[in-house]
Length: 280
Image (cartoon, rainbow, N blue to C red):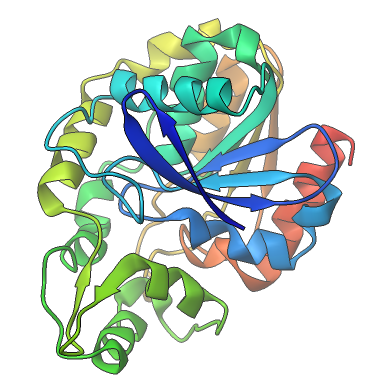
C-alpha cells in the first residue's frame, strides 16, 4: 500500500487502500502521519471506498523542505497529488489540521471535490487548543533511547487517560525513525510544524465557510482531551457553528476525544457515518 508520487516539486508518501469509487483522500493532523486512519480502515472504510491517506509535506515519509508550510503550499501539494494520479474529482477529508486544509481546498478549488469529510476541525476551536496539544508537539525532535521507551512515553500522554488501542502502535511506529543504535526520533521536524501552525492562524476561517458549496460532514468528538475536566479540542457548540455556516452541513457526534476517536468505537461510528454520507 505504500506509494510515492512527485507533486508540486516534492515527493509525497501515501497509503493506497483499495476499494470502490469515488476515492476518498484523507489528510492527517498537524504532527501526524497517514497511519492516523488505520482505525477507519480496520472498521471497513476500505474496501467500501478506495482510501488514499497521505503524509503531508514535512511529516512521515514525505519530503521535508525547509519552507513552504502555508495553507496555500499544502493545498498546491494536494492539487498536484490529484493531478499526478489523474483524479479530477474526489471526496476530500482530513483530521484536525487536515480538516482545516479540507475547508481551505474546498473554498479555493471547488471543482475538484464532490463532498467533504471534516474530522474534529472547525473555523473556531477551543481557545486553549495550542496548550492542549503541547504534549504531542513536545515529542518532536527529542531523541528517545529505544522504541519501547518511546511507546511507553506515548502511552503516558494525558489525552490517552485510561485508554489504549493496540492498532495505534502502527501510527506511532510510522511517526519515528529508528536509528542503527536503537534510538528513535520523530520524522516530523519541529520547525516545519511551527510553520504549519502559524499558517493556520494566518487564515480567516470564518470568512471561508460561505464559499463551501459541497456537502460537508463534520465528525466531532467532544470528549475531554485528557483526564475528566479537561476541555475538548473542539467543543460541540463550535463544531455546530461551522456546520451551520455552510449551505449543506451535516453533524455527527462520535465517542472519544480528538485522538482516541480515530480508533475503536469512534472509528466504527465514523466509518458508518462516512459511508452513509458518501453513499457507500
